[in-house]
Image 1 (cartoon, helix red, strand yellow):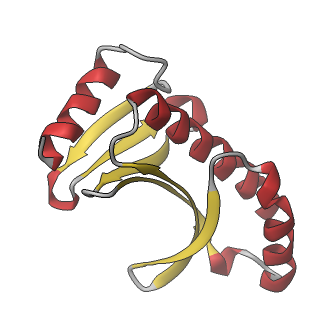
Image 2 (cartoon, helix red, strand yellow):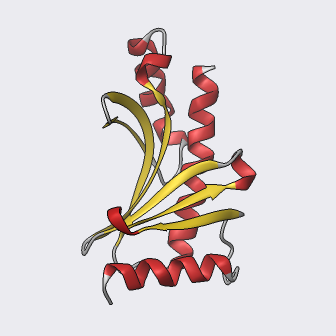
Length: 135
């Protein structure tokens, strides 16, 4: 099954509410071989799901690093919080010309749809928790 077919199957599953997917609008981004979930229960937070032959990557932007007043203190807090954020990791990723804190999770390419659904939800919850630390 190729990437587009896998992504379309997930999109259909979400649209037909076959599993316990988060309440979301979903769009297929063919240019980037990904799905973009706009999670309604999380303030329209976008979460991106990307597929490769080896893995699924679920990612959500949290905030630009420039939004943090004391980056060293914040990074220390994130590292200490890490164990309390199930199923996800936190990193810094350059988007365009700016660095962003991102929440991401990786899953095996052959994992079940239920695992992907849980990862989308976990990323959204963690993104909001981390955003609260910035505010």
